[in-house]
Amino acid sequence: MAGSGGLGGGSGDGQGTGSGQGPPLRAPRALLALVALVLGAYCLCALLGHCPPAARAPALAPARIELTSPARRPGAPGLPVASGSGLRRFPQALIVGVKKGGTRALLEFLRLHPDVRALGSEPHFFDRSLMPRTLDGQITMEKTPSYFVTREAPRRIHSMSPDTKLIVVVRNPVTRAISDYAQTLSKTPGLPSFRALAFRHGLGPVDTAWSAIRIGLYAQHLENWLRYFPLSHFLFVSGERLVSDPAGEVGRVQDFLGLKRVVTDKHFYFNATKGFPCLKKAQGSSRPRCLGKSKGRPHPRVPQAVVQRLQDFYRPFNRKFYQMTSQDFGWD
Image (cartoon, rainbow, N blue to C red):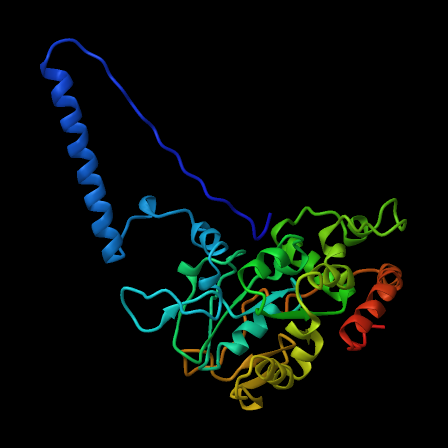
């Protein structure tokens, strides 16, 4: 499951027997010498920070350990590092969802801010060793869209820090589902049609077991999160407005994070070919940059009857979500 993992380890003991005085005395000495040599080498590489991958602990081990230590929650002093400036900390803010809503775009836009340090990849669970170093006053962020729909994620995140700020990028669930399908189709060309996957028995009941449909039930997922976090810890970003008014939506996010509005409309231009805003100056570069080829990917043609059926299906869930968030996203 996304966002899950565990600690693992093993040990082995060997014993031997023999006759005579020589071998029983020499074997333990040789074994002790070998153990001392291995431990010495490991301690040295640990101090230098250059242990080979096989000598490192499993990736999730640091996160598991932190769960039991309140003093090392996000916001608490980070772990000192052997080299470089700043400390590695658990993220104080998370982009928790949703897939194909615009999370990658938001993260890239926010990384223009000098006080935001964000992990580019999706770790699917906190691992402090992966986090970028931050200085005082900077915010550590990460993005994993599967968190919003993973049932255990709210509890695990809350156990680390009940003060975490949570950002959810949402988009019309019908458009989002089609975009999700388009991404999967690009990787699996022989996939059945969108209609065949979205409904059971032709145009029968909507198949909520299909993840592309299930993700769009935003109200249900939010109910799970509100068992652990108050609504004030959330910011809901419109995926549509992130395209039509990126500076406005990013401005709201900067306010939510307590940051100065550094990223403004001067950083964006609209790419008519992709139908998506691009950065005039990308992070660490003097050249304009758009997101990858997968962003702005053409959607397959879906019959209007299928779109209408899904709009009708999602309408009550959308309205409940509007009520829960006190925001009307205009999908109906």
